[in-house]
Length: 63
Image (cartoon, rainbow, N blue to C red; front, side, top):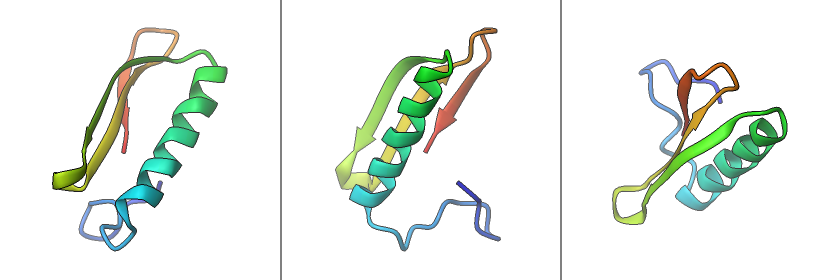
């Protein structure tokens, strides 16, 4: 997902759409060999993220 000029993902996109996109990307990465470490989702804060790890052990987040 491309970052906006202010450095944050588009907050004008509803949480359910952002969540759906993040889950689809996490699923694609799972099929490529990544692992899910944890899912952080806080609807009251308009937040969803998946903490993941690639096959080499590098951790990254999908938001």
